[in-house]
Length: 121
Image (cartoon, rainbow, N blue to C red):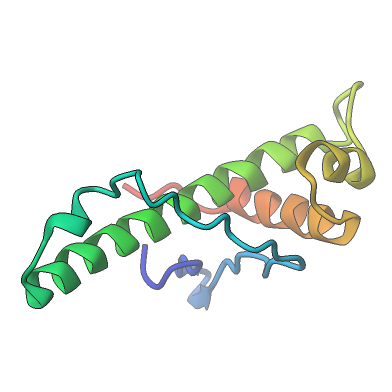
């Protein structure tokens, strides 16, 4: 996958990009506990090494968050599938996830785009 949130694929001679929906809400992160080690970064004394290790961790977490978001979108699209007898509305999905209804609709659409993308080999 190229840039985070973009998966260019070629269809019919044109490039199509899948775009992850932008978050419509934010919550402040909980402050880290002072007594809890964080991947032993607090023990690194060399600033260059600390920067390198912290950057690697940030990129790994970003990648994991992107993948988790894609799985959320796939699940939302499957739950909202009109062919399901027990399909959920965007409001129901929003209620289960803590999203806004608008964001749930966008995630359902993103999930449908992901479902329809060509399989990479």
